[in-house]
Image (cartoon, rainbow, N blue to C red; front, side, top):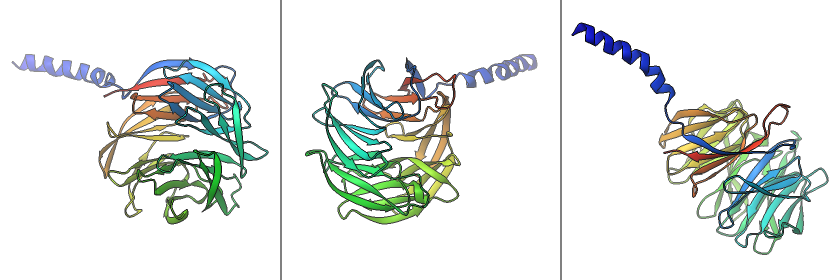
Length: 339
């Protein structure tokens, strides 16, 4: 009996590491599209489920790349200075924020011919944006890298008429990611230049709260868990994940995350958060509103920080830019999210 028990324990110890190493990854790579001859970073994605297309802004390449939803590249749209954010409208046309060295602007692009139909001039440094489906407004951030700048603007574009209808003035040199509640009345925004999270009343177009980001800088990714009254953000310096209580503005918890990240997504169905950075994507799990755990760091690629999660497809798309690394393999990666 003792001999049998000893053999069992020996086998258990021998096979335990193998079983752990073979644990199922939360993300499964199902397609890779090489993107040779690109330089610089990619910035944002836009998804067209009706037209089965994916748009990727290549800011230094000065194009918007078009793919099908399986990752096959089908077109390259030209005529931009430095494209950043993109939005597919209900009529399948596309709005692109464009912030080159001359001036900021947004362009309206024909969704069939890919020709630029119109342009609205904006303040310098037009960059990130967020769409409000309630009032059909597109909020485009314009800012600068000047740390001495005291304010910057969010331009408001009416997508029904493609007209500039107003602006919101915010503190600091620039902002990054934004999220809007389901009622379309409140915006949460990373005031990156001020190292704060801002809360904006979209009806009055005024900043109504400023929450400090302690001991961290360069906030970029942001996502809203409205059901649990939680806001998720991530900072680069250091690479850190924060959870805020939106009712109080207080920090619930923090934890390390992927380095040099840009985008952060909340997978409501699986209660997961994906933070896409250089070399890896950090996958975190929401146990409940106040408790979070690290699930995995999924290997991706150098500066694989631009991404979009599409819940309707259970897919995460990641662009690997490889900026600054001559031997990096630039690509569009398609991941199926695993149960």
